[in-house]
Image (cartoon, rainbow, N blue to C red; front, side, top):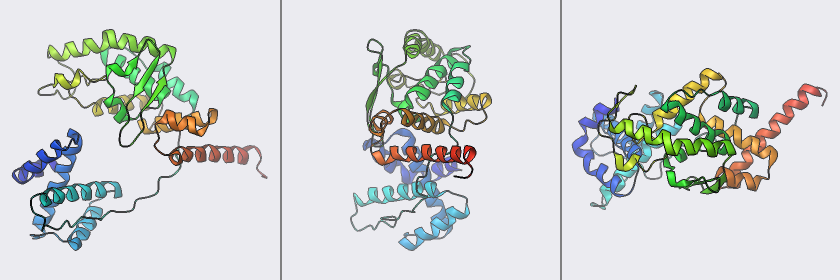
Length: 316
């Protein structure tokens, strides 16, 4: 539905899209903002609204809720609308931003639930089958998930230069959401990363260049300037590895039905770290900007302890 709406309002949103790119927004973020703004335009036109006001945005929120949107998704749509009107205000200061200051309070981040045990994580990694270039790449990604607790965004941002095989470390760049850090690689990871950097990754790039027929959607025009700087590359030549990570998660779920997503794996690793190390050490290793974020995982450990007490000491 977003694709059709984007085409419908492309003439209006084109300059806004260029403005977002000019200010350094990532391609995926720009795509979402344009889609959500077009969605708002379509709703506004259906309601016969010429100039949207604050109360109109409240009605739009109710429309989104009725459509099944989560609080998080509605806030993303409001952010897109807010950015659009901020863009309009660059050339016309008299324009009012109806979405200014409008934000829905979501559920407070709670304690991580349904975590995987350390032995389960180890079993996933050791049992993951490698039989082609795709699975060889995925095994390396899985190693960084279960040993260094990387996020999906960090996997995308990694470059070959961030791997320091000689010192056995990985440099993880920071972002507006996380702190950068340098973490130790396990010995088996060093060997696998060396194989990946010298054989697997060049073979994937070669296959893309030769336009080989890989399963799944094929990128129309691979941006080699982009993907040659990425550590992990989509098999179809796309600069986005989101679908690659989804396929990896699907395979892990088949191996262990308890697996939900990559976020759950990260949360499980961080919780395990806290059983072994000081909270400040774990804060650094996880890249958390605030120690309060790390402390939520301590609460998860306390809940596990309470469950154990109930099981073995029912009178407590």
